[in-house]
Image (cartoon, rainbow, N blue to C red):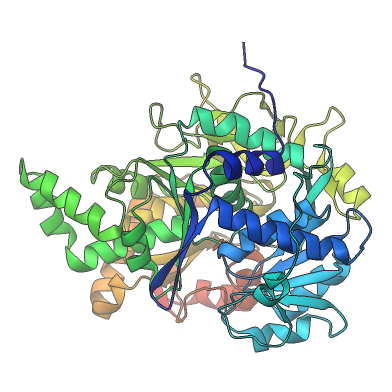
Length: 551
């Protein structure tokens, strides 16, 4: 029988820790290289004062208040203050375009926006209506709005432990989306609480946990694992100051659990191989005693020496990459969930970790595979719908209440789920055959010369492979790269059906990143945008002689 727990609201959970461990450091972040510590008591004091200020604005209960900032202590405090004041938080990616910022602020009808840690505020500023009230965080030099510290300096805090019905809407999370405009996913206090109360005891995470926060906090995975995870376990959050200081900050934190998206794990691999080429690493790993020293040195260099659980999520991670890290005793646990299911679906556990799968169901998760192979999920913490999009919400659920994930998958005899592709990513070649690109792309992960890749082929007789080169490849000659790619192409084609076999590879000049709009803020490839950019060249590349083509 699956256990049924008593579910506590996020605010009540905060009040508990504020009372029983007031002097324990809850959050810490480096400012100009110096770590600043925030105890539960200090956080409580600032949150209660800001909540009092927000309540004094007399907005309607349930009004939306936005957060536009990179991860920091004030991001989390803003979220809790918004809830304590009886409002709904609308977190936004700090690396969106001004047009998307404007779209979300207007669609959500946000009454106020917290502006914080940003790489380029002047770039984003046109997206924030000049009539919208804003509050700026300290430390980040914006100096245009009311400052958080100034507002709370002489404010009277809310003294009582205000709480609201657990069924109340608490956050609208706009998905970054690999296609189309962002959709506002509505979650209640209950959804967050349910996911945390059931997941973290199973993962054996308690108040000794140390979380490292660097992925966008507005993404559901970071929000649930780090913000809500720290809240429900009483653990500690440490933040990265910048991309440049990320390695140093991670080393100084040495977290007990770590979440990386596949792109981050691939970058870690590149950095390790830059310092210790594969041949040398293989030799060391075969020598008793030395192999233990090498593994420890690598973990320490990454800042993961005392990490007990290593997670990967948000996008598919290649099996070869997981196997590579396992040899270093970094046993990545692949997980699977979506914004709409409140990041509560499947994970591999430390004790039960099956490479190539996304793991086992969490308690109270019902799973079905449709006739088309689509994964359908149902549990009590599913979203309440897309904000202002009743028709879209209706289309996303089956008649019996299952959420249509858009992912294809299969379940093995032990209950482990494997993702086999995306329903909408299938494309048809001119031979009339449908090709699922994701499983083919995963097969190229063993080649460390390849940074990113996409299998495309709409309206071509056979698919082709688009790739960008990794940092490691940039130190090699053109001939070495071509030989490496040609070999991978041959190896992969041997495993494919005839209609899936790749005709050739095209090496592109520039990598796909957030700045050129080819990656989402959570580092997933925007397949549609890449296709739009290069589709006009497909036929020409296909007709070119040679197996490896350079853009």
